[in-house]
Image (cartoon, rainbow, N blue to C red; front, side, top):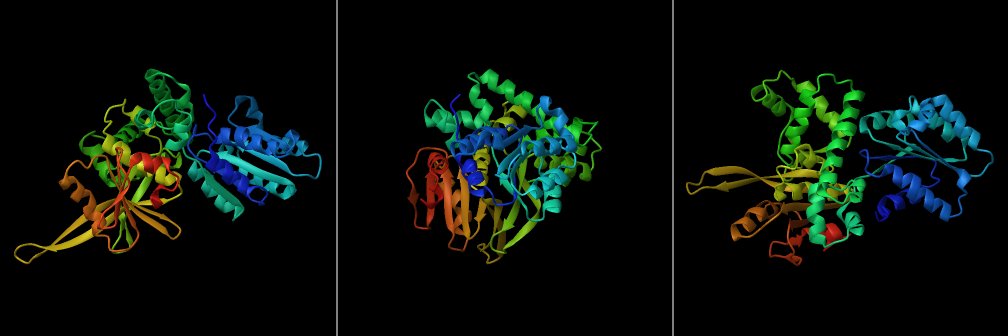
Length: 418
């Protein structure tokens, strides 16, 4: 397997060196956090004159290091490795496996000549304790599975073939080491059941797990569909004859979000400039895991592309909402008719904003009008973009709407500025 540099994340870690804060690399299991720290970052440090004995690396997930999950033993081990006044780099993998990790990390900060980096795979566990304990001394670096451009850097074939495989098998780095469809499918199914779901069941002591399993299947089947915990609970009662209640559904969804398996996108009223509390859309952070969960059925490229566009926007650091555009028209009798149009994604990053539609095909004028309607009714000057799932030159029409191909969007770093 060809080495994938993960340059975006490596450059961020390099820029944060020696800032006196604890760097927390978060993201789903198997997305490459350990490789980033122990291989890419450690290698960069050694190539920049950091001695190997000044790198203290402990993988807390490794069975061989199980004794290090004792806070006192880990602290004593690290302190014993620090024998002079020069800077030591402490790297700890899967920090949530260490009880009282907040106290241990605070202890390392107080030593004065340490630069601390940790990884973690649970958002709730980490954010709750880090925000409370470190009060501005913790900095999160959010890591995602491979972007399509990273995937392409190690793929031997055309970009069309690569995109087809990426949409089906996703971007977990290990997927690149398998050569057959059967191997990829088996890996993803096993990973979902034996790692992600097992983590959730064990961490939250879920004994009756049929409802959790079914909820995952429902969300996987309905990516990009508006829903909420109440609606999902009603579905369980009417279709599954389950007595599951709203609070349980909400908790299960929160667990899936905390494990970085799915993300929730809220609705935003563009004209009214306010959020709408419910319903929401949920997207899988890796399409391969989503597809494996439903046995590679329901591979409609329209929905897969929408999820893929969402993920790419998140990888680029945007906050992504679902846009709502209220429209009032008059009928032939002069009566007002109110309707609501949807913008797939409202993307914000600082002062930058983009309105984006994901349209796998726009083969007819009617389909073009349909995709453009919501963007035309957005009455501000931020850029409006339609991304289509086929090769096409970048164009801009009389309404100021830019159309570009999915390949340009995914592979050009500044594609949104085209």
